[in-house]
Amino acid sequence: MEEAGAVRRPIVVPPEQGRVYVMGRIRAIFKADSDESAGRYSVSEWWLEPRTRGPWVHAHPEDHVFYVIAGTLSLRVNDDWSHVTKGTYVVIPGGTPHDFENQGSVPSGFISFNSPGGFEARMTGIAPALAIVDLRM
Image (cartoon, rainbow, N blue to C red; front, side, top):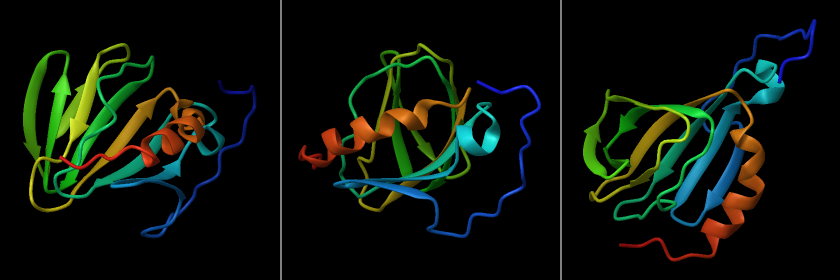
Protein backbone atom coordinates (compact mmCIF):
# COMPACT_ATOMS: atom_id res chain seq x y z
CA MET A 1 0.00 0.00 0.00
CA GLU A 2 1.36 3.48 0.81
CA GLU A 3 5.05 3.93 1.52
CA ALA A 4 6.01 6.17 4.42
CA GLY A 5 6.80 9.63 3.08
CA ALA A 6 5.49 8.85 -0.42
CA VAL A 7 5.16 12.06 -2.41
CA ARG A 8 2.07 12.32 -4.56
CA ARG A 9 1.97 14.81 -7.41
CA PRO A 10 -1.05 16.43 -9.03
CA ILE A 11 -1.84 15.05 -12.46
CA VAL A 12 -4.05 16.15 -15.34
CA VAL A 13 -5.28 13.42 -17.67
CA PRO A 14 -6.82 14.69 -20.93
CA PRO A 15 -9.88 13.01 -22.49
CA GLU A 16 -9.17 9.60 -24.05
CA GLN A 17 -5.76 9.49 -22.31
CA GLY A 18 -4.57 7.05 -19.66
CA ARG A 19 -3.78 3.34 -19.65
CA VAL A 20 -6.21 1.86 -22.17
CA TYR A 21 -7.46 -1.74 -22.10
CA VAL A 22 -9.51 -2.84 -25.11
CA MET A 23 -11.66 -5.90 -24.40
CA GLY A 24 -13.62 -6.31 -27.61
CA ARG A 25 -16.86 -4.42 -27.01
CA ILE A 26 -15.64 -3.02 -23.67
CA ARG A 27 -12.92 -0.40 -23.22
CA ALA A 28 -11.40 0.73 -19.91
CA ILE A 29 -9.13 3.74 -19.48
CA PHE A 30 -7.28 3.94 -16.16
CA LYS A 31 -6.80 7.59 -15.27
CA ALA A 32 -5.06 7.14 -11.91
CA ASP A 33 -4.01 4.06 -10.01
CA SER A 34 -1.75 2.91 -7.20
CA ASP A 35 1.30 4.63 -8.67
CA GLU A 36 -0.38 8.04 -8.64
CA SER A 37 -2.34 7.54 -5.40
CA ALA A 38 0.30 5.88 -3.21
CA GLY A 39 -1.94 2.79 -3.15
CA ARG A 40 -5.03 4.61 -1.86
CA TYR A 41 -7.30 4.22 -4.91
CA SER A 42 -7.64 3.80 -8.66
CA VAL A 43 -9.93 5.66 -11.06
CA SER A 44 -11.00 4.30 -14.42
CA GLU A 45 -13.48 5.08 -17.16
CA TRP A 46 -15.40 2.16 -18.70
CA TRP A 47 -17.30 2.13 -22.01
CA LEU A 48 -19.61 -0.61 -23.28
CA GLU A 49 -20.98 -0.76 -26.80
CA PRO A 50 -24.75 -1.26 -27.16
CA ARG A 51 -26.03 -4.77 -26.36
CA THR A 52 -22.81 -5.86 -24.62
CA ARG A 53 -22.43 -8.40 -21.83
CA GLY A 54 -20.11 -7.64 -18.96
CA PRO A 55 -17.40 -9.63 -17.18
CA TRP A 56 -19.87 -11.99 -15.45
CA VAL A 57 -20.57 -12.06 -11.74
CA HIS A 58 -17.39 -11.57 -9.76
CA ALA A 59 -16.18 -10.13 -6.46
CA HIS A 60 -12.90 -8.67 -5.26
CA PRO A 61 -11.66 -7.07 -2.05
CA GLU A 62 -11.65 -3.46 -3.31
CA ASP A 63 -14.69 -1.21 -2.86
CA HIS A 64 -16.19 0.23 -6.06
CA VAL A 65 -18.04 3.48 -6.53
CA PHE A 66 -19.56 3.64 -10.02
CA TYR A 67 -20.80 6.94 -11.49
CA VAL A 68 -22.73 6.60 -14.75
CA ILE A 69 -21.68 9.20 -17.34
CA ALA A 70 -23.58 8.01 -20.44
CA GLY A 71 -26.43 5.72 -21.42
CA THR A 72 -27.98 3.17 -19.09
CA LEU A 73 -25.86 0.65 -17.23
CA SER A 74 -27.51 -2.61 -16.23
CA LEU A 75 -25.92 -3.56 -12.94
CA ARG A 76 -26.20 -6.71 -10.86
CA VAL A 77 -25.33 -6.39 -7.16
CA ASN A 78 -25.71 -9.67 -5.28
CA ASP A 79 -28.78 -11.17 -7.02
CA ASP A 80 -30.56 -7.89 -7.85
CA TRP A 81 -30.42 -6.15 -11.25
CA SER A 82 -30.88 -2.38 -11.59
CA HIS A 83 -30.86 -0.16 -14.67
CA VAL A 84 -29.00 3.00 -13.72
CA THR A 85 -28.79 6.14 -15.84
CA LYS A 86 -26.47 9.11 -16.24
CA GLY A 87 -25.80 10.81 -12.91
CA THR A 88 -26.38 7.71 -10.77
CA TYR A 89 -23.86 6.63 -8.14
CA VAL A 90 -23.60 3.01 -7.04
CA VAL A 91 -21.54 1.90 -4.03
CA ILE A 92 -20.37 -1.72 -4.12
CA PRO A 93 -18.52 -2.79 -0.95
CA GLY A 94 -15.53 -5.09 -1.39
CA GLY A 95 -16.47 -8.77 -1.49
CA THR A 96 -19.92 -8.08 -2.99
CA PRO A 97 -20.79 -10.18 -6.09
CA HIS A 98 -21.53 -7.88 -9.02
CA ASP A 99 -21.69 -7.65 -12.82
CA PHE A 100 -22.52 -4.97 -15.37
CA GLU A 101 -23.68 -4.87 -18.98
CA ASN A 102 -25.24 -2.56 -21.54
CA GLN A 103 -28.65 -3.86 -22.57
CA GLY A 104 -29.47 -0.62 -24.41
CA SER A 105 -29.10 0.66 -27.97
CA VAL A 106 -26.56 3.43 -27.23
CA PRO A 107 -23.09 3.28 -25.65
CA SER A 108 -22.94 3.21 -21.86
CA GLY A 109 -20.12 4.67 -19.80
CA PHE A 110 -19.20 4.91 -16.14
CA ILE A 111 -16.39 6.06 -13.89
CA SER A 112 -15.13 3.47 -11.41
CA PHE A 113 -13.41 4.62 -8.23
CA ASN A 114 -11.77 1.67 -6.45
CA SER A 115 -10.38 1.73 -2.94
CA PRO A 116 -7.80 0.75 -2.01
CA GLY A 117 -5.72 0.78 -5.19
CA GLY A 118 -4.48 -2.43 -6.72
CA PHE A 119 -7.41 -3.57 -8.89
CA GLU A 120 -5.59 -2.21 -11.96
CA ALA A 121 -2.82 -4.80 -11.55
CA ARG A 122 -5.34 -7.53 -12.51
CA MET A 123 -6.21 -5.84 -15.81
CA THR A 124 -3.30 -7.56 -17.58
CA GLY A 125 -5.17 -10.85 -17.05
CA ILE A 126 -8.74 -9.54 -17.34
CA ALA A 127 -8.32 -7.64 -20.61
CA PRO A 128 -7.00 -10.52 -22.76
CA ALA A 129 -9.55 -12.94 -21.29
CA LEU A 130 -12.50 -10.65 -22.16
CA ALA A 131 -11.03 -9.66 -25.55
CA ILE A 132 -11.36 -13.22 -26.89
CA VAL A 133 -14.98 -13.72 -25.75
CA ASP A 134 -17.98 -12.67 -27.85
CA LEU A 135 -19.75 -10.26 -25.51
CA ARG A 136 -22.63 -9.47 -27.89
CA MET A 137 -26.12 -10.01 -26.53
